[in-house]
Length: 92
Image (cartoon, rainbow, N blue to C red; front, side, top):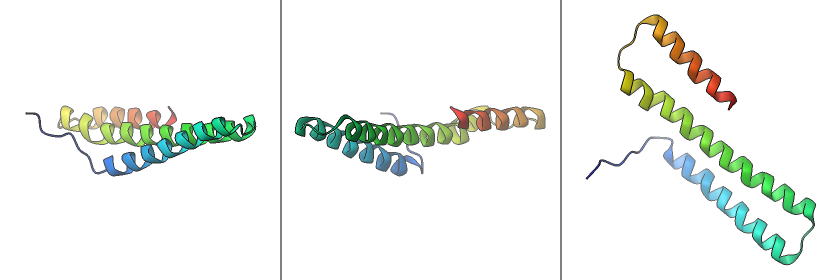
């Protein structure tokens, strides 16, 4: 059996996804209740933001740990390129 793939940031990702889940449930209820499109759109924005933040934390954590573990020791130029790559992904 494979060892569980867990990082220190996973609890934060889980928390954000639970928040997104709560926002999504609220959005569904709002539609059932016939709330205004503006209210629903604002709630959907909250869902998107929570998921986006969870994804961002997960990807950055992967780059910070898994990528460097895979590559091992690299020279200074390679490390600079890796650091630039990690930095630019923050804009995704």
